[in-house]
Length: 254
View 1 (cartoon, rainbow, N blue to C red):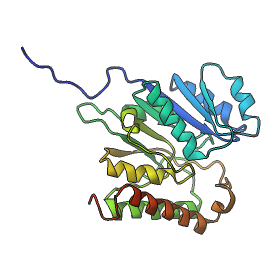
View 2: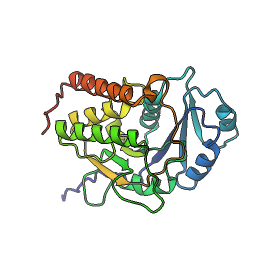
View 3: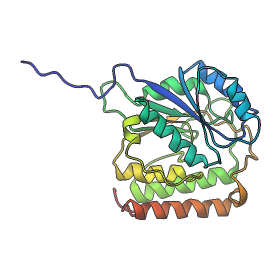
View 4: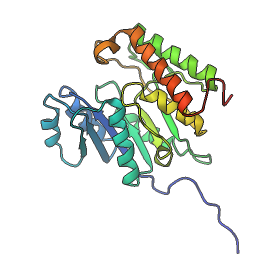
């Protein structure tokens, strides 16, 4: 009897697009209506919004909504999205921000990149705003670009992880890989925790070029984190802590 090769690619991958929101009354309806054109299954994680966002979400039909009360933070919103994708047996989770800076038409292509034909699947397909120049790209705020580049260099020097954009929220994940993450960082440094754990679990990672669009350069990170030096120190603290917790010191996995 001839044995059959088993493909690691689902026959019809189920794709979920998750959107974390917090006080996004200006953008949420436009973003959701655009996402609908590119993905059937949509989850919104409303992280304790205090503006009209919850009321606007009630007007939307055919989307799933998780509401945090009180606010848990960006990392907490993504943790809920990860768990939802796992519990509902999706194959690919795409995360996209709700501030109008990401372009939903890339959702199908980014999701498909998780399962390239004839190759092993990728665990993370990470959007990069710096991998390719698109017509109409914005100029990033200098301090944000500088911090991003600093973290990119740290991850490369420690782990050989060559990223051009370590903080882009537009990503596609293989849902089976999400089960390996242990999310405890609930703030904006969550991506750093995920990168260290991805290295620890030897996940397969690639970047995917997306346009660089800034619609609100004054957007706040909250309290003292709006100060660049304070934010960078916070990121360094999270990196150091996660390296110790994962027993993945800088210089390993090279």
